[in-house]
Length: 306
Ligand code: CP
Image 1 (cartoon, rainbow, N blue to C red):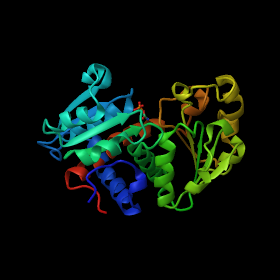
Image 2: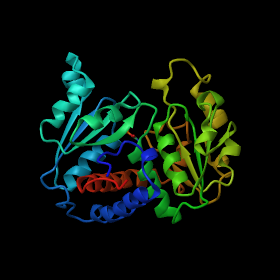
Image 3: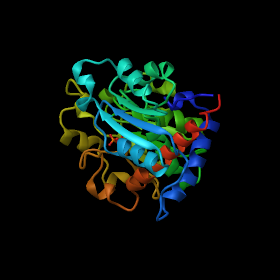
Image 4: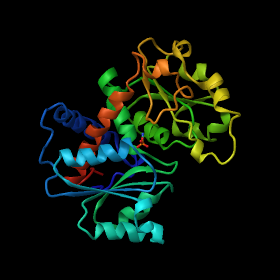
């Protein structure tokens, strides 16, 4: 059994389907007036975030509290990390306080893989550098499953800053394992070499990437990770790669518009597309709570089958 969720690369299609089915049950709880369940009673969940977050951190905290766990948050800026404490010492300190689940976001790819074998607690990767963001991809997949009924043969176009995105990597692992056809698109400076080896089609033009797509997923342009200018300006990016209502017509008429957030309005999508009828961005956020409840529940019951 796997005691941790470090990435979708490590999970089987059966593991992923099990999470999605459990999340569907958890979602029923979210629609109740009383959202309290005893699923994690007596368990302790700690969120350790070395990078900023609104959705992921809050949804893990709410998911833990809805399931009656003791939930606590630590940010790097308010911790002894500022005094020079190492990642491993910090993680072992949190583990020694009786923590059952440690949820961690870190700017370094591989950081959760480094600490997970050292801890008795289950480690959940809440985003590591440019590697993976598995619970984001799972909530994206739950949203797609709800709206489209399944994944086999579904055309999913992921466009934007492919190079710096951990969301795209987790989505590619998860979606291709369940039978979706994934294409990626964006400026050539934002697409790393060798993406085809991950089993996806690569397009340098937005029209080709999204034509006949069932799902159009935009990725945030991560200006904070770009050391040098990889395209002239945000205005130029929007002109050639941004998706407005006219461009969205290249996709299927009932294509879903998705984005992990936070969105740069007027860069990845026009506001009319973000707020339009095809957008399921807020439903993704709701599903984030259900998916995180499901993952923590499964880990508290022994983890994922090998
Ligand atoms: N999608 C996502 O990870 O958002 P946050 O950075 O707000 O957690």
